[in-house]
Amino acid sequence: MTTPGTGQHGPYDPWQIVSIVASASSNFHFDHWSGDTSEIANINLYDTTVTMKDTYSIQANFTPDFPVITINVGTTYSVTYPVVTINVGTTYSPTYPVVTINVNTDFY
Image (cartoon, rainbow, N blue to C red; front, side, top):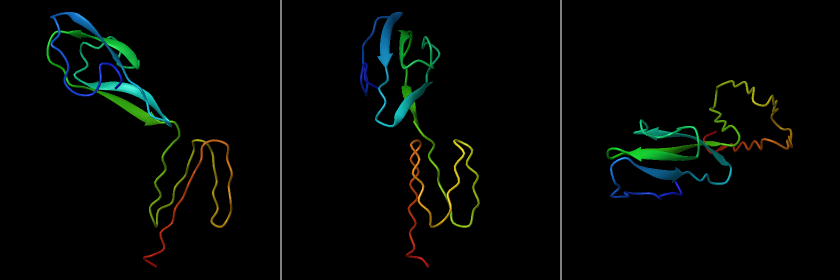
């Protein structure tokens, strides 16, 4: 969170309107606010306000810009966002998203 920053803030006057702004790291985008959200003007906007009527604990939630795919040994997966087929032993060079698969063969 960029404004007012991480940690405890205040004191605020009762009914004071306080701006909150979430800033995403690279490869992520803001998703929603969670926690004590009853007085947040819009939990789906990264730049919104809170009406101070009490003490609140609020978290900014972020989502990766592309899907994170976890592949477990012995499991079959079907990826539909976007439609991508990856065959073992081939090289795939998509423009979006970038899919990286690392295989640890130490246990074989």
